[in-house]
Length: 413
Image 1 (cartoon, one colour):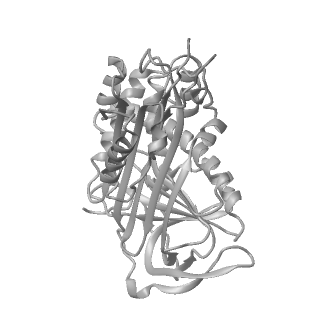
Image 2: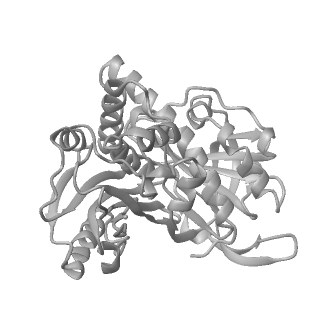
Image 3: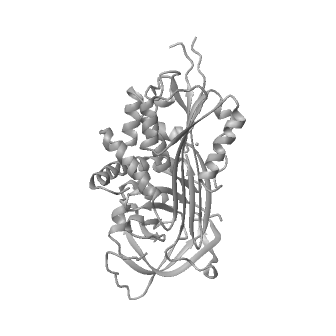
């Protein structure tokens, strides 16, 4: 008889590996090119990940495709056979390992060296006592993913889960406290974690006294009064005909272009246009939208909002083609030969708060401002009223990395 122990490898994105208990920085041009290869692939995965997440979540949503992508890539380097093939294909990882490893290292280092805002990516591996990681896998996680490994006695599930949750809490400025329950460690061999934390001030802040209660159209029949911020300022603005939407780019404070992080608001033209816009979201290139700025004077009205989401990522990953890793045929012999491993759970907890000063966001999965284009003269400022369901995306433009993404169907603050 086959005895199967559900182990968890949590992804957060937390990735918990369970035992199958059976009898059988944008420095050199080359680095930049590698980073582009990795971030380009990561963006395609992000688009799939977001589309699948948003289809299953009609409520307010925040997720970090980047967080999931990093922790899954880390696991993929330890996968072999069909498991590896599925993971690499879904994650759009570069075929050349040297490019992939150098690129992920550059991406993590670039994002971690951003000034003016707080942006922190942290990776961590917890293994159960007596678990031996292969030297090659340990080297990749330490050198390319900047991760550290720590051994815990998972049979003491309460203590171990407290240690893991404390790490998450420390990395996310206490915003995400509990990613793992003691039960998650039942039969677990390994937990892989990635945490992303972001806090940034708007380059052009909203004034608190201009925030008023105003109606937000939840759907064609329902309105709800929300805290609507307002400012008159010039923002990068454009129409997105394929999405039947417009966009506004709200930059955060930055030291130079390498540090440029923005929130893009994608506002469907119709109150019930969210899913149409989300279906074509994968066609957008945020870096191009940022680089080809068209500054437009406007009265911008935007709701304050705050969300925390917990995503069970397994069904999302299965839909985008990663099925083997959860099954008894999983092959992670690049991590260890014994015991056999499979992924038992993938969890992402994410948080975002957007107010007059700026934004704070986190996810655990488990200077001189110059504009490169002229202002488009408008005889009078236009009015952009974000008073219906919309999509938001926080992007690091130079690395072309989507840090956080979500939609707001009904602002809550």
